[in-house]
Length: 235
Image 1 (cartoon, rainbow, N blue to C red):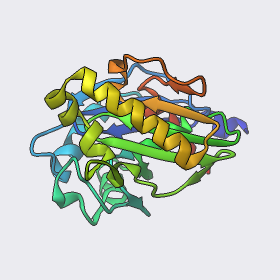
Image 2: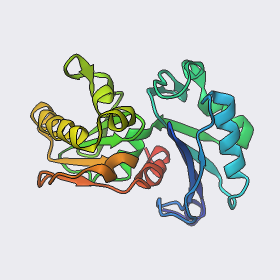
Image 3: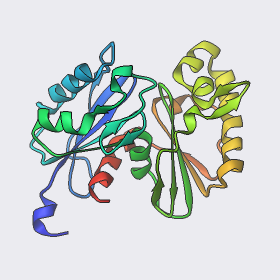
Image 4: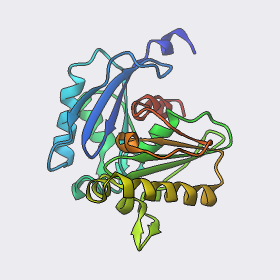
């Protein structure tokens, strides 16, 4: 890495169903600031969330580029799905719009993909799931991302998807015991499906896990959803 690139700083943004978080990273992806957070505006429309990002960014030191994690399918900076936000996000050019507001180049990817980049070791088959407002997922093979997995919206059990059974709404409705039982079954199911070497579990609700995880599974800190943003500029 040359001296010029060493000076580049990245504003990492994590858009979630309950919170919008940001942090400044150095060129190697190390945090230079503490994480800042605002509650996700309601209704969670594009204009309101972009305004929240701009407000948070104004309080940060200088940066040269932006990496954004978004809870849905993203293709070339355009958000294609937004199950836990607002339908106005479907077909919205987030990269272009945010770049215009901040005056910096912007890269956007699925939030679970970014969390994975911040957590994986880059060896073998690695699966990442995030437990938050919804259920995010990302699959990596020798460090390479398999795009647009969106496992959360696949059938899981009793005619419902992983997200319907394991999202925050299900946790609040059914309680920790039933939610944990479901999650334990989901992990067993996913291991048979993907034959992964390692499972990484992140997201705000990972703190509610009460059973012993398999030896090849580990909980990763939620800040990985910001730290992995540097990978969008290193691809």
